[in-house]
Image (tube, rainbow, N blue to C red):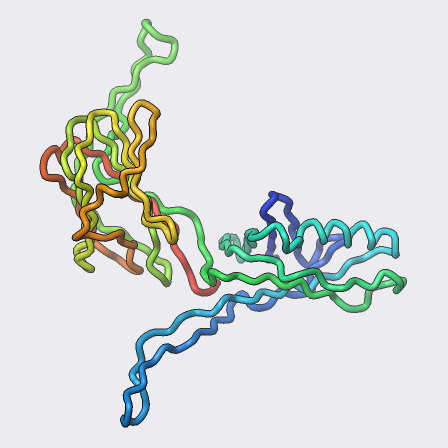
Length: 289
């Protein structure tokens, strides 16, 4: 049985399926529907038009719910639903568990339907509309380690009760990243310096996109490059103090996405590349379930 959970911006949630009482799910529509606007250019005097791209429209998801019980019990459920689907508190998240695969989409409740409190029994379901202005579903975050400190052996030494870990360093400057989503995805590139590093750069070989930061890192410093939608920030943390260094980005480069499919990423620096640990995190996006 598929299961759906809507969690609003305040953290209140409702899980509904065909067997939930007193609020039962009849059906949910709009999850797989995809609509878009075709952007074209019309040339004067020419037949037809030149196709440029398709922009996806927001997704409308409608949840049809039965509310069981008599008038007083139904009023309790109505007040609870008002709390869950309150459109004034903003964007929530709908999690869809389909065959054990969980996909999530951000959505805003589009008002609250009228619920008849006088009828002794509800004979029809009530529609609750959710508007997903970002029409993409997401799944679990993916993490790709380039150069990093790998775990090794563990010895129970007498000097400490916890023992001591002995690891080793893995250095990989190039790696294939697979994004099985149907759309490119923003990412977080986390760079940790174990020594001096000057002007680190990350590049996607397939798209030839690259991002370079004209900045010198010191041992123990952590830099986070966030290329996520509407973020585009570079921050550095040293000794617990975080500084926005977005202005240090080389203006000849740009923030990049992880392309859909397989792509090859490589990192380097003007000097000290061997002193960098790099981890790339991204969340695949899908236009439908």
